[in-house]
Image (cartoon, rainbow, N blue to C red; front, top):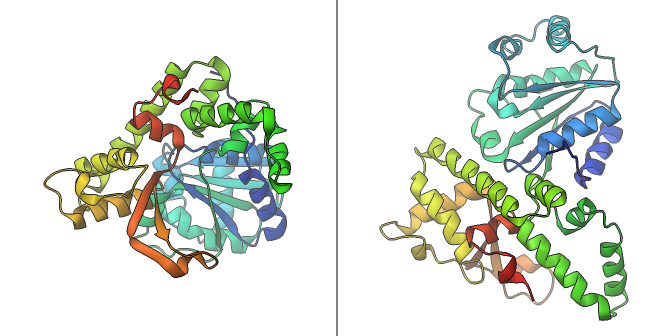
Length: 330
């Protein structure tokens, strides 16, 4: 499969940060796993800077991690990084990327002093739940701006397929309160395809290159397994089996109110609530609360007892329901 990079809306937000911050803050891009954080940051670094270093803390050597244990000599740190990665950094023209920074809390804490030094820009990426949990013993830098990232939305999905006109045209029809007419059936079909493939970049890439939904299913299965393989890491807080059942029950209950007792026998409501909280913290679930408000503010009539649980990606949701092309076709 080719190393394809899709256009993402967050790119413009990162560019805005670069232009407005001018080195006065670092940028943290956070979100669920496998939504394309590392890919878009690397693409941004290649396009917008003279040179860059990507420190992937998932596979970095202990030697590199240890550089952030002592910040007394930043010149030494920068020289070491340039030698290790064989990259020449240029003052105010280069960026250092801390990929999966939650794996090295000291590097995240160092941001305060690196930003103050002012020579280079800094972008961090991290998976939501680990970012929030791996903070013991460190000071979270106030110089850190944050951007939430999500799977590709419908418009980004259409861009990936080479369609840059559909969404602007739909918006024009909507603004003018006009029916789509003959185009309605086609746009409905496009939306159904998006619901099936979803917005996880690997699944989209597979569809773009092969137009084979079975291959997409394999990618989606792999992503779900990746999430579920993480669950044992949090067994001190929540039973991994309960996390798995809660995730799958959320998909099953997607069309109605989420009922905690339907997750599985033998679990107390408070236990399921903890599972929901952890999956929400990880960015995998998004609780939506019912409201009776007829106008703004919507939150004034919230009914916390009536919630639906949305999954982060429609393609993963339909895959958990074992739905296929035939199930959503006209």
